[in-house]
Length: 514
Ligand SMILES: O=c1ccn([C@@H]2O[C@H](COP(=O)(O)OP(=O)(O)O[C@H]3O[C@H](CO)[C@@H](O)[C@H](O)[C@H]3O)[C@@H](O)[C@H]2O)c(=O)[nH]1
Ligand SMILES: O=P(O)(O)OC[C@H]1O[C@](O)(CO)[C@@H](O)[C@@H]1O
Image (cartoon, rainbow, N blue to C red):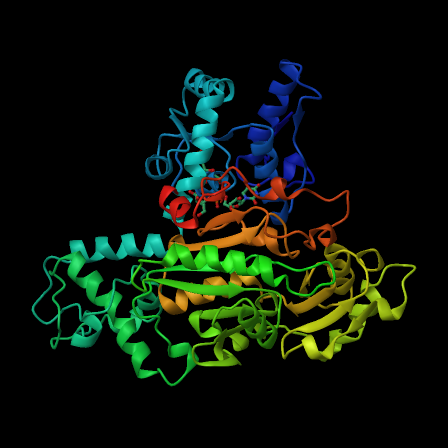
């Protein structure tokens, strides 16, 4: 089945621009070649349908084609790559640069029907070529991430500022001697946040615009380290010094009764810690969990691990972050971020009513005050069969005007209700930005199963390592109903960024191989 997305319309005659003409021509071709039943051309689609359309095409081993006579940029080609869908694209315009970076398909002359047919058939018929294009797209898509884009852009700006007039100079703050000795910080995200303030035309400069891009970039890179030290009284100001990469332990190890499975978690932590041996402190550690901050600290101690050995704890399924080397209290800045549209106490009593199964008692999903926090309502669940799935509760809450994130944790025995903008991936992104560590230098360790938000930790710009045999009981049966989609329908599990640790393989070896 071919799917043609040809614009939303009620009536072809009312379509703007040349859309109506193109669609009419296509319908005539469908008729001429008698393709009824083989081609779908939906009249309407919503923006939220678009990811599913790309995924469907990728799943059915299809190809995305953009045969524009001229394509100024080509966002759709980047979108297709992000979903693992190979492309055939016009050789006129932006796609030339995109394919040079992504290698995710073939360029064609849009005026040549023969060239288009040839390229489509070649990708569709040659499974090896199709798979290579898919994997290249998934592997290289980070090149269109904002940090990468900004880095490239700045380097071009700096490189071409060769002839400034004497009073117009690019002022990049100097590098204090102390910070110059710090390890490389390869992300520009911090620098970029304040860039509009840092670059100004001013004669009293430390660097000329004519200086090499590398020099300017270097100064920009180092600046946040100095800023951070000034604010070191706050957790937010913590600069993880020599840290250049992060290992995030997000292995949700619980026993059947919901208590932390200390033995298994200890194995996961040991596997992570051993990967940092010999890194000279350049590797940082984060625990990412559905537990509260006190529970996480206590559990780490039970595992024989010093909580202070972790750079951060992401707790309550991403509602809180703390820095245990300093104190076990939540980062207020992050709390401020996630507070957006948090319905607070208004939603607290509604959840048990909407979340318990039809035949269940009120006590089957009851508020657990001790496991809650400012931005997390926690509920104790007696049995997985007595509660509704995440998707169903979320939908019921939305119908009542509450938009929240819901996560079952502790082997289906606890439901965390947190703000919509709080999640474990979101917390990770926050740390990556605050600390200036690119997500490409972050590796997340997960189990084969886990909390209901586990599948959201799998894709992204970071690398994901699946540790088999660590989690005996997860909560993922409570993600969505049986008629819902499967994880592999929304996550490209064959992405080069997602790998499973082989029996006896060390985390460090796998990281090196990725
Ligand atoms: O039926 C459609 C068509 C497009 N999109 C989305 O809309 C966005 C833009 O699509 P595109 O077809 O490229 O739209 P235009 O606005 O016509 O294109 C201009 O804007 C794009 C985004 O910057 C650039 O890539 C193009 O080169 C430029 O011509 C993408 O996210 C698409 O997924 C839909 O959701 N439904
Ligand atoms: O094929 P044509 O006429 O050059 O039109 C291509 C244009 O249509 C779009 O694909 C969608 O509007 C643009 O991205 C692109 O610029």
